[in-house]
Image 1: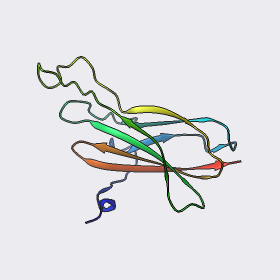
Image 2: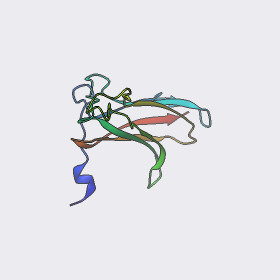
Image 3: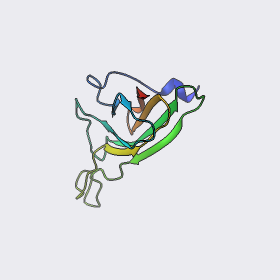
Image 4: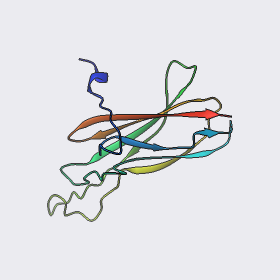
Length: 130
């Protein structure tokens, strides 16, 4: 079995596990822009000790490149764990974050998220340099 066989996809508007990538359609080469990644934008994903998004990784693959570049990995460490019991803790992290980046060529932004129960999920969007 290959890991790629386990990565799932879907429309984030109808599937709560798919990472959402919010970025401009086009940017100026070499200028900083924001990319927001999240899980559960349209349909909230549970954020409990038992069921949560553990991380989201963001990659950029240049249009003419063979391999992607890892841009960022956002880890979500607190899900209500506590010595008092599950979901009794004082802090819960939400699976979202903002990355500031710049690119010099057009390509594809790709995000992979990991749910501790439902595994790996991916999404991608094209971005142009003008």
